[in-house]
Length: 366
Image (cartoon, rainbow, N blue to C red):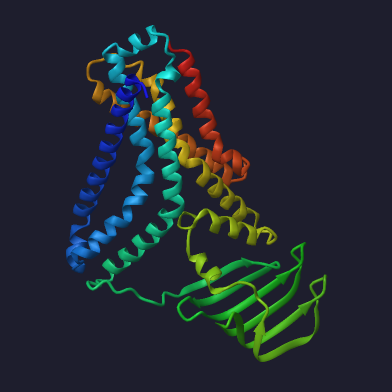
């Protein structure tokens, strides 16, 4: 690596990790002070608080990394421009993209790290964070957690075009109560309706108690008499883990879990749910690359800064650019979830616009 490349990259890396540390520190201090009365009220232990904020670290790193990259690139290039070092580099025959090559590589590496953390660690961290928060609110100083947190009024699109409506599901005991299952054909016509008072999952099978089965023809008319069983073994491929996953929001799921859920819904006719999940899925792939794209966006703005207050200018420009980027991204995602844009286009459109705009502005630099 050339001395010049090391010189630029050293500044980028130093400011990036300084920003990460400062943002994390400020978040913990502000959150701790704002919730101090609740912490004292519930007598939360020091160990519980440490676990709570440690669980937040992956989440915060993913959220603040793009802004830290933007601030690092804007400040570094603005400082180089302020000291006329950019002019010297350009005079030696280097283009803007050649000067920014190593910062962009660094941004790409951060993007890969963010992708890994957001898929492998963030869902686990968010679940752990919520669990610890409940412990604190319930005043559990010894850190005990309720083992059986039942899911009330659960509904689910399952395989084989089945709709599940369950009054209560207990993951710990693998038991469901108040069960209604509607089985449909490819055209969403009702074929079968199953009602049961209770269902227990044992040895890989669902055992329903006091079940009644109604069969229907293609016109929705009931065929024969209802069939009653005091106890019936049901041929249902869904496991308790599948039902437990429904308490999770997409941000609490891994990419594989979202893909699996989309596949389960693919023949259910739940088009709006599938569309929203696809937007979330494509965003999970695209969002980590915000770091490298936003570095490219910050370069032309930083080179237009001429004032001496480089540091304050860098912060101001970063806030404005970051705000515009996130507004554009939020609008595109909203259009995708409303059906006005295809899910893949909704997740990538803001990145395409920002990338195109960045390259355009760089090409117009003197």
